[in-house]
Length: 213
Image 1 (cartoon, rainbow, N blue to C red):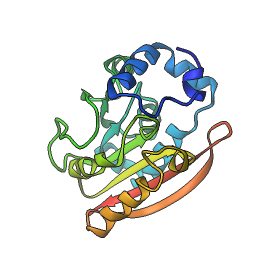
Image 2 (image 1 turned 60 degrees about the vertical axis):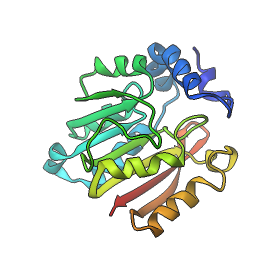
Image 3 (image 1 turned 90 degrees about the vertical axis):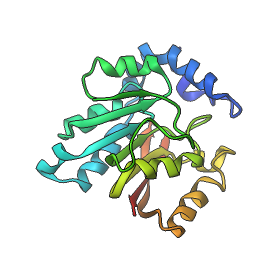
Image 4 (image 1 turned 180 degrees about the horizontal axis):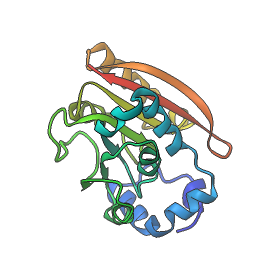
């Protein structure tokens, strides 16, 4: 795979197995390519959780990195003294790359959707999801499962390309309304939503922060 995986839109009808296959083929070059892009989203995700959990308490915070890939967000979280992290991703080869970094405890190879993950209720203090919402990736049907595995009062941080809210059929007029419905149902509350420049060069990002109720 090459940098074209980043810049060329994936087929919106790609299957889950197609997504897995693409990432399996991308795993060994993924970190290098995103380093060349000056990919800022993982650090933004880590900074968000660092603002929420201050100082020494970070070592006691248990985080699930959703759509963790090779662990780019996990590396940034580790730099900020978060040490208790698990990862879930659909690609075992991406997780194999993450494993050698010694960031995570559990490495869970699974698709994140409406089906229950191999994780207990209220298991985590926070979820970091950086780049997991993209073409053929996570959909709003995963939100209840994210909420299930986070303790009441815990934080869910979702970072994605802002344009996808308007250009992808899976998200346009669907993703944010689904977020709002879950708030109306009393399952979580939105703490913040902000757009930031340079998710990677010339692509704005959007950051959602929710507190589980």
